[in-house]
Length: 284
Image (tube, rainbow, N blue to C red):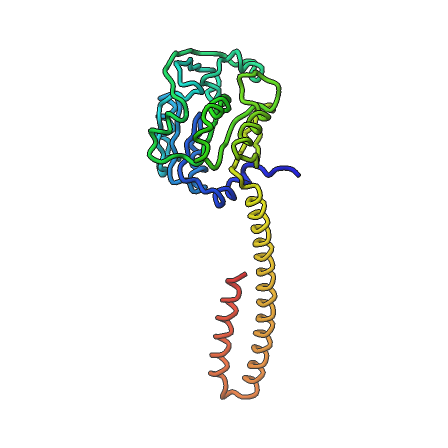
């Protein structure tokens, strides 16, 4: 059985495991942040090492209405001093050097390398007022961060992770290992999305909700079928009512022809019938 797409699954997840607070690591665009907010997230914290990028996100009109906090920080697996690489593809800038990404992007160029202090994910979340229950890892080194942060996963319900599904550089998070590691921590892979490169994908994990998700999908299908049936019944009732109205009009028109004294009464009845027809028509 093929898994549903991420787009088809996110709304259902918002009902089963609603986002109370979202922590996003990486270069998430304003439209993506807005979409996550529309799923019901009351607050989003976006973490990136590039201050210019964060300022652009803050200045975007699409994020004006969001409860969005941007944080300039570097989160790594070890919390040591690390190199941050600025690469010619903005989304692929981060802790992975351009040489290790060229199996995917052969024309990728490294623009700069900067040594900076970093923190681990558990250390960073200690500073947050509300612990995130949705975690978005929009970076290709997300798995090492998770593997060194399993202690905080007990508070997390949903995880997005970019991963390598092919045989590219070993520094990249692999889909197979991500499924294994998160599976051992109580998460199920419930959807996956494609990226521009065929060897890259976004994996969507949720905590122990496969059965609930399947049931909710069934219930929504039943609800849609009910709605269609209800609409069909309403259409039948409307046609019957219109037929009855037509017969009444014919009856009172005949009565009017026989007795001119009933003209005012019939006119009043026909006006009421016309209003009833208009009301029925508005339900179509």
